Structures are given as C-alpha cells and as structure tokens.
Length: 359
Image 1 (cartoon, rainbow, N blue to C red):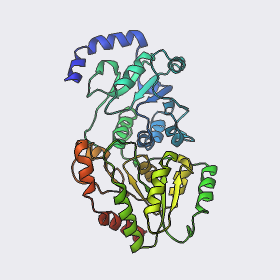
Image 2: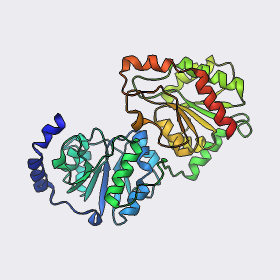
Image 3: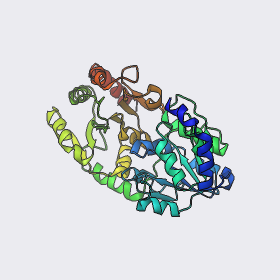
Image 4: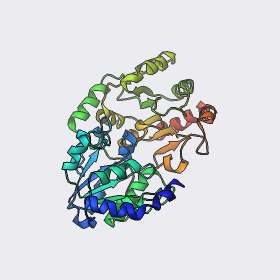
C-alpha cells in the first residue's frame, strides 16, 4: 500500500528530480558511476560475481562503490572498481555527502532489490542525473532507468539481471563471488597453515558458528555434537573460525570437544582468510558472511539457511552449497530456534563426511 501511495506522486518526483539533477543519459554515455546499497560482507560478495560483466558491458564507464570496512576489503584489487569509498550511505549535508557530490557522477546504480528507499533518495540528492534501480516497491519517479525484477531468485541473480538489463549481456555467467587475492594474502594464509599440525596430510574443515543475525542460529551444542560425530568417523582437522570478538565462544566450543582443534579468532583478515579457505576441504557455517567467503574460495559449503527470509532468495546459488535448514520460509523469531534444534547433528555430520570422502 505504501508503494502504491508513492506512485501518486511519481510525476511530481520525476519533474522535481529532473530540475534538480538534469536530464538522464543513456548507458553508452555514462563515464563515471557509483554503486550504492546494502554493504555488509555478504551483500558485497553477492554483487562481486557480476562486476566484471558490468565493466565489460559498459567499457567507457568507471565505477566507484560505497563499502565500509571490513566489506571493502573483498573488493580490493578488483579491476572493475575504480575507487572504494569506505563509508556507509552518508546523511544529507554531511562532509562525506559533500565529498561524494563533488565527484559529479553520471549514474548511480541503487542495487538493492528490497529496501532501496535510502539509496534512491541519496542518489537523487547527490544530483546524479541517471539512476538505475527497482521500482516494484514504489518511488519510480526517482528512477530514470527502472529494472524489471524476476521474483523470487537467489540474491546474486538479481544483480546479474540488473547488469544484463543495462548492458545487453545475456545473464548466463556464474554467480560465484570473486575476490582477487594478493601475494601477501597467500603468504599470511601459508604462515597460519604451518601452525596447524598435519595440515598437509589431514583434510581441513573450517567451522564458523556465529552470525550477526539476532535469531535463527543453530545451538552451540549442536555444532559440538556434529564435530564429535565427524571426528569419530573420518580423519579431519577442525579449525574454529571467527572474528576477534568471537574468541570466547570459540574457545568454549574448543574446550568442550574431546579432540584437539585450532582456534582462528581474527588471526586472519578477510582476504588471507579466503586464501586459507582455499586449502580446506569443506566449510561448515551459519548463514553469514563466511558462507560467501567459502563460496569465493571455491570449496563446498554446508550451512543452515536463515529461516526468517525467502528460501529462494537466501538459499543455494551455487552447486557447491548444501543447505541443511528445515523446509519453509518467513518463520517468526519465536519459531526459528525450535525448528533449528530439530536438525539432527548426524545429518549434518553425514553431509560433511560425504564431501570429505569424495574430495
């Protein structure tokens, strides 16, 4: 209803924005563009699979992006990105807003398919004449190049469709996230690997147990049971991974296990972490940033999908992913933990064992 209500003002918004920003330009005339939208690690990695095609399809245009740390780190060295503005979407009139306005961008791609309100309004206030975005939730008067949405799809596929619609390229490329590693990233990963006993002979499993989601997280005891079953069935070296602030929980899990493990609590930055994951046979993760880092590393990922969202949008987007969450979607927080608790650790362990023995 709110979306329909905004459309009543679309003609006024269209006229006002044209007076404020000037006339829009066709894609072939764009020379300087800004990518703006959600910017957590997963959000950025979702888009990374299509950045090369964006640059290929519009070779005369250079692209900047808003991405604060740590998400900005995954875009370093990416040839499709000219500059990373390591900031959130800035408030109107702030120093960061004024600096962005001085860039005089020709086009802004507001890539969010869900909550795009702030991105679209910010792009208009920045005076950017061409604005690419979705309009299915209203505000079409602020968009000069509307994108048709094919709902539902996996989140990375939405951006692939967007790039296809403005470049004319056929949307058939792979959706695997892309992180271009530097030699120093590899060196840091190798230094960490040398600290792991028998890392060259025993398969490695990287396990991530935390997420920024407020609900819908598999209980720590279930992770413990899974790792015990796995260790009893096949040779494996488990590395418990997370950020520095996760150390306490990781060490609690480590202390509860009957076999030795390695804790990596922020010892590696995002890029060296991806370099390390390339040496692992499998990743066990919550539905969080590390899931997508594992996908970028090209290793199989076993995870438990976020039950509060669309199963299609947040589910598998690569054939190397294994979603072991219960069937269904859009469960309220009051039901999520109970549903996740029903997942038998033996089922998760069996999936990990199958991957380890097949690789």
